[in-house]
Length: 312
Image (cartoon, rainbow, N blue to C red; front, side, top):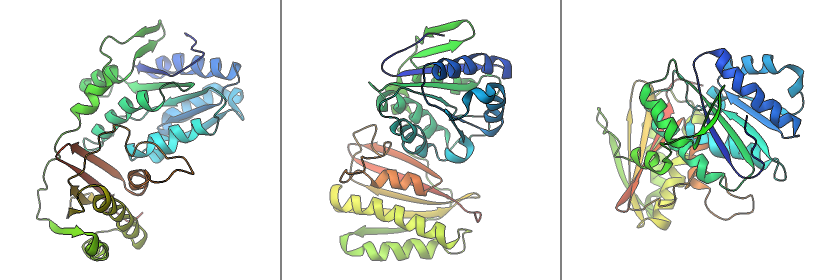
């Protein structure tokens, strides 16, 4: 396996079976451990167990193990709260990460945020000493997903070695999924808000969340998320906005629209510095919600929040 001593390495592993996954993942980890590089393995539980068992005691004390189906259920949490959080714990050392953000079972609604995440990794870690290996189950994932994975990773790796991806174009993938969100199938409750009506907005959200299957803590999480976005509307996006709520079979959905524009592709995707001022709102929203989808242009921004309706 090719060794990179400085800068970002973001590689795609398309695996057909367990053996082909381990044939790349284990040397990737051993190479880092031999160099004294801390490692994070963040994959779905079954793959996590396979890698951990195959690596054995070599990773004791040097490898952090994270079930991506829990930590990364909302794709918007993965970059700030999983990948960046691990890299930031070791600011003076190169780190290794095996991250599998897309697996069979990801929903159609979640996938666009996953693809945008993979594109954003290239910008978020540019110039940082981070090696990221992203396994994809080539036997069970949709061919379109695999095709876009080739566009968000500059290099492909397998048993035969490493080669450049001819289709690498992360900006194109990110923009492809920055599209208008489909409208609700059911009737919605709507409220226009401004600075004076922010307290009313919190009550409006709580009233319409009642009886949807969210417990009190999850309703409070949604209120905080909506308040963060609405406050941003008032301060930076024309002073007002519109909120809509409706239910689906699985989620209570809350959508906020205002006249602002998120021109930075990393907006809300990185945890701000601990002593930073501002820039926390959308990151907090991702932490509180089960899925966040965004459509943003120069004429306005829509942020759609999903809260699982079953009691957690």
